[in-house]
Length: 89
Image (cartoon, helix red, strand yellow):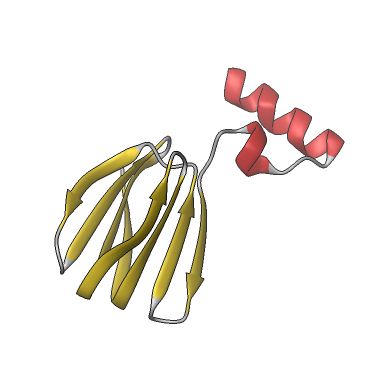
């Protein structure tokens, strides 16, 4: 019920859903970079897989030569040869 209310407020006031609903924002630059805003931490990290916790589940980034280029409190950038991006519940 609370999420429905927030959704209606967001729609009525034309506010960004990622801020009102505490969702992550993901920006993908080609097959080389992914920027994730509003994350909750790294679950797994290797050269072939990076799994990041978000409020709506886990984002799994698969590829080759993956590196975490930058990480701050709520933003993370992963670079490398991106192959797939999966959303896990």
